[in-house]
Image (cartoon, rainbow, N blue to C red; front, side, top):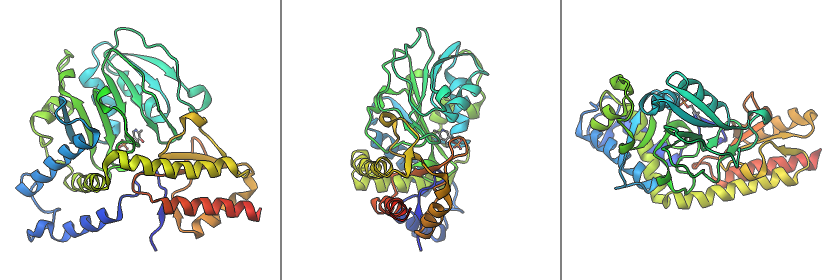
Length: 354
Ligand SMILES: *Cc1c(COP(=O)(O)O)cnc(C)c1O
């Protein structure tokens, strides 16, 4: 039986995408070849890469606005250093909203001065800092739009007069934002876009070429832009499955349509967390993520009973990250309202029994 998959990443993808993707392993485009055995330079794959890059810009509303989309390797973690390598000449600002921001800061420090403009570390990152002032003269400001581990999400983005970089790994394509306010967006595929192995980078070309250091070819955005994201062998299958997922999203009505569904799923779960006395939320209410809900039991003695119940209901991947504890329900685009309903039923069932 198919599980209700609340895993934080890698995570659920649309069932239709799994079907089409598995067929392509056996026979891709009726070519008599598997997608796993064709050249990345073949027309069939070049078409996939072109469509994937185009769909990414289209879904973000960034077509014809001076942006390029790339599908790179090395995960979002490589973007922590690649952004700094390419864009940090002397000083950059970071908003520290969790483990991933922290790691981005650590990497960037190898390349220049880092100003931690605001942080919620003192409260174990259970909220998004607000009302901070941004210093002058930054090469860029770096944000993490959704904090996968802590379950917080930036709702209002700061206005800045320097380039704005955002790690959107866990909420890309989940909600409508003016994506044109960002100069560089990156997202590891495995949270809301596709399988592990590729990372989407959407970049405004005109922010490049401003640092004086030498940049190795593989780590230079200009290399990948000039080669159409095919400088070396790309992650063929991961890009293909990401492309299928973006097609699925486009057919569904795009980011606006999925946002409405995501809002309804999050409202259903957060209402239960609020109304059920056996549960409490971790993140500050106004900053709660629509993608990752973090919560715990008010009475730890109920842990065994609850864990047995949700596992019996066919739920997978609900355990919280070790730095928060408790539970984390990840409700990415492909997770259905029905699955959230099953979780909420288990939570209210526990209340009836306890
Ligand atoms: C998972 C995650 C990362 C790390 O991604 P990798 O692809 O594993 O390097 C970075 N940032 C955020 C927000 C994440 O959720």
